[in-house]
Image (cartoon, rainbow, N blue to C red):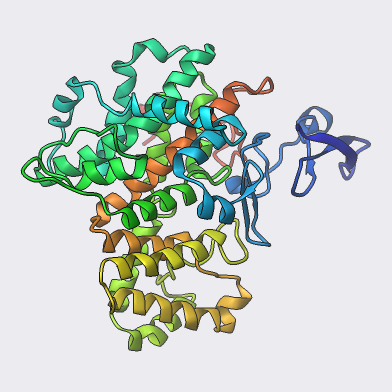
Length: 435
């Protein structure tokens, strides 16, 4: 279902006889949107919206968020139902194709992904160009971008079959790329993917296994990893997804577009937030220090921030955080971690913050990053891999959004406007006359 016309909005420019009648467009869910494309022609003005917080950049059928109510839907399905009943590859199929797969479609899709998990062997030597201590996200940016140099047979973005193959390749290969980035960093041999393992299992195998001994994937941890991937698979038009769409609007190949998304995700205000939560908990150190820490957070002259709370869109409890909290306890039980100081600190911090009028009034509720960092740490992932794992999960959302954009008949190259505040027109003064 596409957006439909739902009335209009008339804007009159003060001090003139100019007005503009802007169509109101209504999606399936959410508020109506004013179509402002005529406003410059009618009134000679642009609109100003730093950060695009009140501007719809595209029409999409993939993900819906109601931040006030704490709702997240993938293709109409509540995230709670998908987290409980689905798998990551089934969710990947849903995001890409719009519907849940039949039994036959599910098998074909999983087989298609498994057939593409290996990397071109020359990419092994490509890793040697990085320093051993390179951040995994730096490696992922480079290697994902380099895929376009190895897979020339799927770069025609106007060809549906090329787009399908590129989707398979990206979803399948990014976990291998991420796992190898870790292995390269710690000096261990690369582990090749195993086609008899599921998606999350395969990633854990490549990340943890060594050739010297067999490695058996813990099913509880595999399910936790699968769940983390489901919760991070897509999240509407966030910074990295918008980056992928903007890059894709130029006609760039999908590997380049996903590399751009990875670069955007790397920022600490986006994909690096769960890493920042652990840094924050480490700085607090002990439950007894929480009141002092929160007073610093409230001090507007202080630079101390409460990481893992609040969200650009959610003004209610992040639905993913509730799921992640339960998973966190399950993982710690499975690993035999009964008294985890970080978890105890996190729970107490959550309890105090949720009952503090300052944070309640500002609707600063825990988000998904608050618990995901603790889970990943318990599972043995170094801090440097947290954002890389986010990229592994979000790749399916990026490629789904990219594919939708390419198939959108109204798609145009992205070209935001600006308010120019520089110098007015002036004449050049020769160097000898400038004193």
